[in-house]
Structures are given as structure tokens and as C-alpha cells.
Length: 242
Image (cartoon, rainbow, N blue to C red; front, side, top):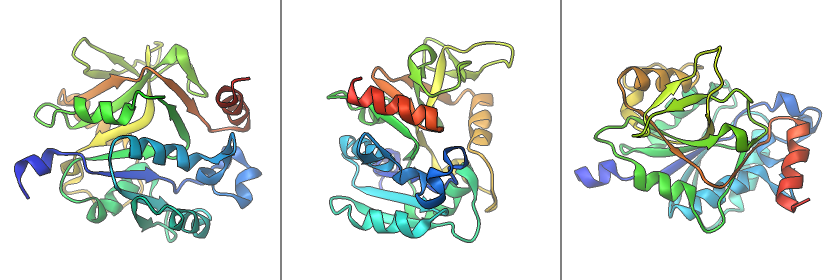
């Protein structure tokens, strides 16, 4: 593999293994990524982002009601889809990506949360994120949303950002201007030496921040986090324009 190919973002992973506990009783019978929002399963909005970035290889992990996730993905015929099976043990975001690394290859890759909807119009946010990606100075690149314009997110935000796009996690007593959207680019080397266990990707963000290698790019479109029934209703209203 050439150095150029090692730095190119050619694959994506969609995190679809969560229990969706805050959306019960809906998620007792339907896995959260397949819960419909404005007539479409949530995960299909993620697939739109992947297509918009000209990525054709996608890994999807599954745990809760995994058979339904697998069945849905068999209907996706324009992408090369691989399943990372977490039926035996739920590994959280970081552990889930670590388990899927053999499917993701040696180059940097995109990771998307299945319970977020990033609306772009003609302005493809994941493609812009890939263009902004600089592996010489970045280990992690997060797509950020202005806290004041997010729907369903935490009102206190997540990160501060300097003029170069470098991120610093907010102090607990502060309100941060930017919120992480759940869309990102990661280097596989971040996982070197780690054992397969349940852990959050936040561990890797903090390590990258300590090295000055955690960066963000602000999304200019609409971002909807569908974590609760109230957020689901708001997302429906936004998409339908009501």
C-alpha cells in the first residue's frame, strides 16, 4: 500500500450496536438505527453521508436485535457492506471500532453514530471533513455543530475550538460553543496495543487532545440527535418542515 493510500479515507464505520434504552418501548422491538424518522430508518441518513463522500466500503456493527440490522443492510446494494458482530458482548464505541479494525484496513476511516442525522443539502459534510483531514497534524478530526443550533444535543456543548480548528474539552463549569456531531475521522494507529474490551472513544479524543492532535471542523447545516422520544418528535418536525 502506498503512502498516499494510507492517508486516504476510503472506508466508513456506522456504530449501530447500541441498546437505545432511552427510546423504549420503541426499541424493545426495533433496533434504534432502524427507528423511522420522517419515514426513513435513522441509519439510512448515515448511509446518505457515506455516499455523499464517495465512500463505497462500509462496516456496520450490531448487537441489540442484530438480525434486523443485518437484514436491513442486505438491501443496500450500492455499497460494499461488512457486518461486525457484537452479539456476544456490547463493546461501546471504542471497543466496537477496535473489534472492527480488521475490516477497516490500514488507512484512516470515518466513523458515524447511527442515532444522528446530519442534513447537508448539496453541501456534503463528510466530504468536506475528508478534504480538511491532515494526517500529518491530526489523529482525530471531529465534525462539530454550533451548540446553539443543535437539536436534541446537550445544551452545554462539548468543546472549545481555536482558530486552527484544534479542540479542547470544555470545563464542567462552562458552556462550550461547539458540540460533537457523532461524525469523525480516526487513525487506526490510535488503537495500537489496546485489548478488546468495552470502552468509549472519548478515551482516544482525550489522548489526542493532550498531544495537540484533536481537531474539529464546523458543520454548517442541520444536526439532529435522536436519543429520546422528545428528540424523535423534534427531528420529525424539522425534517418535515413543520
